[in-house]
Length: 115
Image (tube, rainbow, N blue to C red; front, side):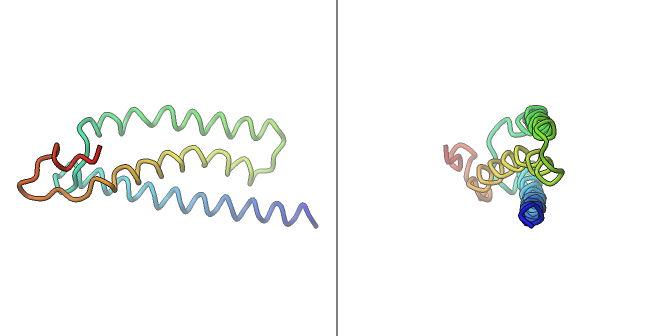
């Protein structure tokens, strides 16, 4: 009975992580596209950062999932451990980009930069 409850809990956490990753990813894409079209303030070099963050995030996810599988965890735990690094990266990007806010007419990027 305990194993069934544990697996059900792990499966629930996996799906919640998937939903959070999907939501954060869509928000980050929307904020970056708005930044490219000039309606959202984004830092200089955001396009480069957008591409350079992919390889480390996916490598970390691959290693975490592989180590989890080699440790003998079930598929739910392996999936969750694989998704968590990607979800963390997407969440950090969402929080970081959301703080910049919309680009207002007459306001330069240097004035809108919260850092």
